Length: 296
Image (cartoon, rainbow, N blue to C red):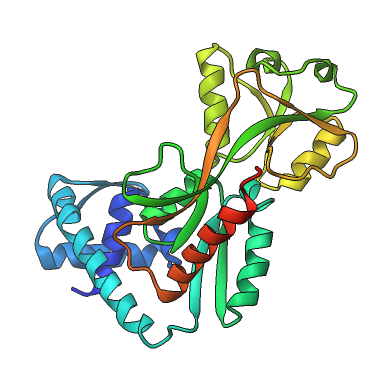
């Protein structure tokens, strides 16, 4: 067996879906299927129960995954540390950041970081906060700027700022007359929400379920400016963090009666090796947030 076989097995075992595993590993599904079959032949055991594209771990498969995954983490960390020792003044950082947070945090951080560390590259993955947290846990990202509420204890968190979600609506909307908006007011309103990997979307769905109704979602999009532009055109109502700057004419915001407050922070997996570049970014973001986010 080789490391690639084990990587394919661990990823497929964790996701229990060969299509998603192939997408995450950037390989074809047949490559994963063949690799896992060879691994099973070498071990002399069946690791998965196969039903179409759904792979469910057998009891032996679960045990093997439990033992192999920590070993793979150690190998990845050792390899990263050895390579990193040769490139202390350069290197790439894979950073995840949700679009709504990116709208007010990423641009100033990027500008200052590029000035201080011109030889270091930032590779950006833009996804919802839940998706970013999942990618951090899978080891696909070095760092992530995320909503940290209810995050896994396996993630190290450096707090940045506390924000509140505001409802965005056209300036001529009937709800503009209210100082605060109750979720019940949105029962029959068309909503433009972030996609399924968004922490905010999950919260909205959970709170609506408590009130025994399903929100009328007319569009799911992670393009913040597009969402706000559609609000201005009367397509639906949307949400924005209060730390973001709203520059769209004819769109106004109102807080919720029950404020939806979230904590934003820089996160990384505790047991993942952090490169010199990653550690430099963590220090920079901590210093930057201490001086720039106090007023938010």
